[in-house]
Amino acid sequence: MRVLLLGGTAEARALAKALHPRVDVISSLAGRVPDPALPVGPVRVGGFGGVDGLRRWLRDERVHAVVDATHPFAATMTAHAAQACGDLGLPHVVLARPAWDPGNAMVVASDAQAAEVVARQGYSRIFLTTGRSGVAAFAGSDAWFLIRAVTEPEQALMPRHHHVVLSRGPYRYDGELALLREHRVDALVTKNSGGDMTRAKLDAAAALDIPIVMVARPPLPAGVQAVGTVDEAATWVAALCLT
Ligand code: NAP
Image 1 (tube, rainbow, N blue to C red):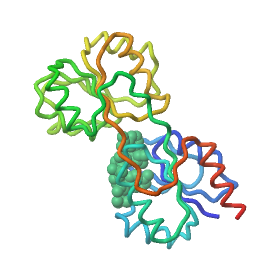
Image 2: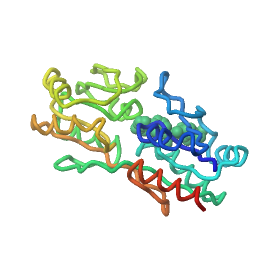
Image 3: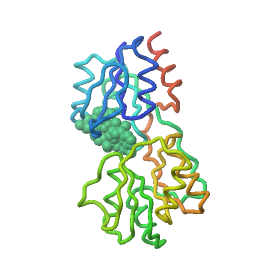
């Protein structure tokens, strides 16, 4: 029973730990981060070369099932996995951590819409946490941005006035509160990533009455099976092993 585990998240690492070595699980990382947190067990790194490449790889490596535990915003990889598994008739499940309740946040469908809201509302000091790829939508803004990302965004794609903080979670409430105060932030822009590792910023913003602009998750491909926790994904794999 060989399982491809599409990763790049804490949940994927936890699932690899739960399955290895009972199950022959190969974790896959995109290879974007220079010093990634590695899961236990075998790991491959880099893109597959689109749906065709993934289909080929799954056949060559004699994979029996795929667990897609990529980040909820890794929509391209998720679409490719759904397509390739559908084509090959492979069992496939998406492990997607539950989304945050947006509460009073202004919910938008894309980074571009978030940038429109920021401009329309006249926010001037924005804590931007949509990640490296989410920065470009704000490139034309005259506001000041505190940009937090794991790797440095491309200089040409950044808004004129900014300060970059390179870090990765987890983040704690006290630290987030201090950061928002220190930089006199007047709006938070975030993706609805879900999970506990990065949610403290929402509570800190709410405590300071700072408005939140939240980019909604891309929808999952039609018809895919999804689970919300590592335990459920491990149970799904265990059930396959018994069949
Ligand atoms: P994406 O836009 O959905 O994927 C773009 C391409 O990157 C895919 O077509 C695939 O290339 C390659 N790729 C993505 N995930 C891969 C994986 N786990 N293994 C092998 N190739 C992968 O993905 P993304 O949003 O850039 O995310 C890249 C990675 O960072 C993912 O592993 C994701 O879990 C992690 N991550 C993403 C975010 C986020 O906000 N998007 C946040 C935290 C972590 P080919 O077409 O060549 O196969």
